[in-house]
Each structure stands twice: as structure tokens, then as C-alpha cells.
Length: 488
Image 1: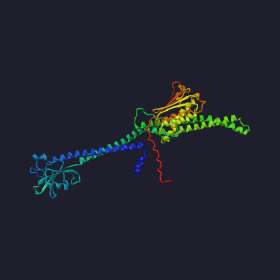
Image 2: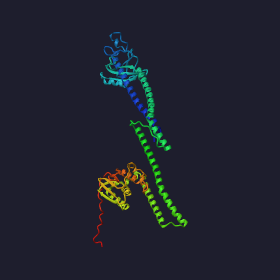
Image 3: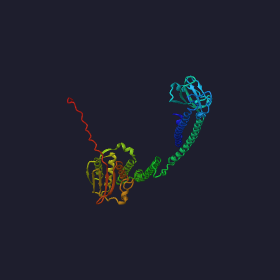
Image 4: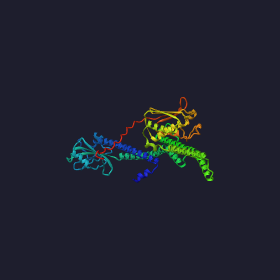
């Protein structure tokens, strides 16, 4: 990489912005200055050329020939006498005739001889040249015809000094250079000031990020003007939104850990107590009565089942969105509900579960969706009275599960989908308080909605709404291989 480019990239952003502004202004000022200088030069040369055209008739006799021997006598032609200029006649062989009133001699070049060869009195040639002393002059050469003295074609050369013009142009160039320099320096300073002002929010954002990285404090926020819509304001809002989401996620994680620890403590304590009783019975040689022993083993088995269910629920809640993306597919909600009903009937054999299901397809993760439906049915089985009825209906993508249990108090309805939340009346029943939370998450990830509400006539009705998906094409059955009839 070019060392200059490498050095440029190593500079801070504000320094690079200042350099870019200064370079842009320098380019613009240079372009304007050069253009201005050439325009002024053209105007000054036009004025000099006009003066040269006025000098063409000076010092020329009535017959059109330059008088070289002596200055003309004072007569009506005095107005044509030269004033601060050069006048000379140049012949075809390169010799010149210079009158006494000329300021000096102008060096003849090939351009002047070319005018004689062209022999066109209607055109003239302007050029810059020098006199015999090397002073800069502006020359106009015009063809005049045949010289009366030498009978050679000749041209008249008039010239004027360019010292004043060049001095003016030099002064203008110096002024433009100074103004350009001041402008570039001012632009650089202004660019640095603008860069500092414009990047001040970025500095605040950088300080905030460094503070978060150093202290893990996610409560920091960057003040943003509500009406601002520029890139820095959008970046600041995104940062504030990100820190808010991270803080909320961390709070939820800490709450989940605390709640999980609290929920795990109860079955673990019960397991420990029961196992200690069994161990002490074995160590002391005093066996427990068979009925008590069976009750303890049944309790241990129930607590282990509850622990396994709780761990499974925690694993389900800890899965990220990216872990389920590849498993999402078009599934038949009707088949999923039927599979969940089979499991629910095994868990509540004393209950009557009726179902009216119509075909419906949706995009979801099959296992997670079935687990969510099972949790809804388990909740209905858990709170249904013995010999009660559970009504399940699927119509137009809306799944309803109605039980005839005690129902949920109105003040508890907003909390039924919270993690580890359990109604005071259900604390004695088995469960971790994560089932409905898993239901809400699964249905939301599938683009649907789930609600719990009071049912007419008592009980609770759970309503799940899922968006539809195109019906998948039927699977083509595998064609059995055709056997050769000659094969025995």
C-alpha cells in the first residue's frame, strides 16, 4: 500500500475530514484563481492589441512609407507621431528601417517574415517578443506592400512595452496566491471545527461503548434529539435500543436463573429428604414398613419426573431463534392436534375429550408446536373436575380448548403466560409454571396469537390463532421395483 495512503488512513476521522475539506477548497480556489488570472490576462492583452492597432498609422508618410532618415516635419500629420511605442519597417530580406522617433528596435522573428510572404494587408499577427535590450514587448506585424527604397515587399511592425501588463499580472498572481492560501487554511480550520462538531455525538457514542465494555453497565443512554433524522441520530437511537434490549435480556436471564433455582430447590429438597430416609433405614437395619417404602419410592419417582420436566422446559425456553430457523416447515395443525389429543387422553383417562377438527396448514416447528398444544391440553386436564369434559375445536386456523374447571380469576389473567408464575390455588398441583410461557413463545414465533379467557358457563377457554400456509404437495409413493417374471 502507498505510504501516503497508509498514513492518511491512520489519521483520526476528524483530521481526514479536515484534509478533505481543505483539499476540496484548495482545488476550487486554484481553479477560480487560474481562471481569473487568464481572464484578466486576456482583457489586458485585448487592450494592448487595441493600442497597437491605433499605432499603425503613426510615423507613416502620406505615401504610406515609414520615414527612417529623420523625424517628420511638424504638419497636419503630427497626430500620428508615436507616443511611447516601437515602430519599424521590416523587409523581405530581414533588414529593418527604424525611424528616430521609435523607442528602439524590436527583434524580427520568422512570424514577421511569414506575414511578408503572405502579402495580405487585411491580416496581422500579434505576438510577444523582446526589443534589443531584452525587454518584453507586444508586437503587431501588418503587411504594407513594396518598400520604395529597396523595392522589396515589406511589413510594418508596431510594438509596446509589456512591463506594465506583466507587472499587473504578477501582482494579481501574488494576490490570488495569498488569498488562496488564506482560503485553504481557513477552510482547513473550518473543516476541522465542523468535523469536531459533527463527530461530537460519535465521540459520545464511543465513550458510551467503552464505558459499557469496561463496566458492563447497560443503563447508560445517549441523549438524542427527537426531531433529528441524520445518520448519527439513527446510530444513537440504535445504540440506546440495543443497550435497552441487552439490559432487558440480562434482567430476564437473571430472573430466569433465580426462578429456576427457586423451582428446583423444592423437588431437590423433597428428593434429598426421601433418599435420606431410605438410606438411614438401610444403615440402621430397621426397614421401613412396605407401604411407607412404596410411598417414598413413588414420591422420589414423581419428583424426578418433575425435575426432568422442569429441565426440559428450561431447555426449550433457552433455545435461540436461530436454533429453530432450519426446523420450521409447513405442518398440518390438524395432525398436530390429533397427536396431542392422544397424549392428553392418556393423562386424563377419566375425562371426556371431544374434538372437531378441520384441515389447516401453518409454518412452524413440528415438535415445538405439538409441545405447545400438549401444554394447553395438559392445563385443561389438570384443572378439569373428575368426569368432566374438554371440548377441542379447530376451524379456520383458530384452535379453541375449553374446560369446565374452576376458571382463572380476572386479576390473574394478565400473568398466566409469565415464566414460573402459578396461581395461588394451583401451587399444590404438579408443574413448574413454564408450560403456558412455552406456549406463548412458540405461538408467537410461528406468527400467531394465544389467549386465555373465561368461558361462558364456567371454566376456561384457550384460543390459538395461527396464520395459514400453502398446502404442501402430496408425497409421491415410492414405486416398488418391478421383478423380472423369470425370477423364481
